[in-house]
Length: 382
Image (cartoon, rainbow, N blue to C red; front, top):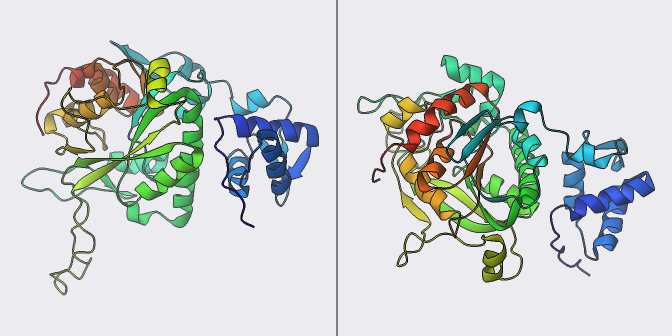
């Protein structure tokens, strides 16, 4: 007989049940933990969800005593799950208008925040983690080697660096999925019910990121397609372009996918809107709903001069996306990978309070000068 589909649980329920069982049992294997948690939550729980939670929190929270058996580290589970934030993550590194920028690790910052305190997330995370490691950032900034490549100039314009996602190994991709699963689990706690999450991605990795976010408990709500011609794809076979002049290895990229997710509602959409002010997307106007295709363009030179971040998105696009994320125009928008602060600048331009988290000191310093200048740029059509 097939097992019934696992029940959906509130964020933190599975975690608390695992702690309660292991605190009493001392140690147990994955099957024992699954069965005990299923009884406590009055519903089926899969081996994979328990194993993923244990794996992602070992060795920080759990120890693996033998193959497939785990125990708690220490006795104070709250201090293990939610380590105290570093001093620099408590105080904003920068404030401008209604936005606050913190320097620190977003996982640590999210773990320190109260539940149901953020109404939307818009972010452009490191797609493969590898490209934003310290060693790869050094190569990027010196312009030599590594994952990053400098596309050839085109029509007299020098193109910005792009990461080579095709060099990522299977271990890198698994680490990517584990990272986004853990990140989404943290986000679920701080988001209000019905809050939307928009995550920039790319065609090669979007399905990996989407799978991790969905497994963590966020509801997929489609994609926002940013129509923009990029420098990815369209190349002939390397070192064989004369032999195969009519062949393109990959299609020339003409769009950028932004994954759209939502924290599960409490009740109906209208119930959620009344209580939490979230659950839908803000219409462009009374007569025009927000659409899932946004005409865009490569980020303009004047914006790149203000904020020379390799992944900078244009304000004309970000302002449209950010505005849609708070359906009643109320609440706080979060960017956990703030970079040079362009999302915060867009939130300021549309009148929303916002919070950004950025771990790189160079980008924090860039944001301090860039946010105000990007905010004051006039809106330009795509």
